[in-house]
Image (cartoon, rainbow, N blue to C red; front, side, top):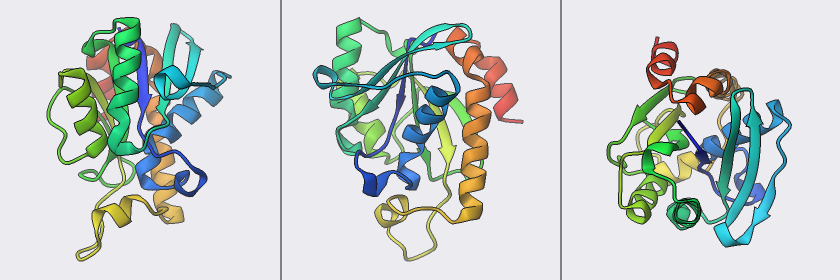
Length: 188
């Protein structure tokens, strides 16, 4: 059962519509669907929502640290609520998937994603779930940092938003921990 969903992104208006904020965008879509309110929680260094989804309550967290320090926020809330890694779902942008692809996995490395790297360091575990939203790779010669911190084209946005909608549609199964059903749905 998932008790905490963390969306990764960078705080600030200049980052709102960038590829790197796919996790924040996912949580915003989820909060909008279920009319969940956000509260700034300084003790967790993030925006928090106790969200009542169809199946029950789940905490949503948007760290207000920058991406490469996401683990500070996640570590604080995990220790406070005594959560186990398998009760956590981290939603993030994924360079290895084209825009519009969304996949779920459990555990694994960080594959160079600094937000995941910091979360792993602060939790001392890799065994949390990840919902990976494809944003594609930059063209040859363009720096990855520049690519993820810019807005996608209109067509890419449509694909990314479609992937987000697919993930939000699976929320009850995700929170219930029915990961096989979610994987079968999203990966087909």
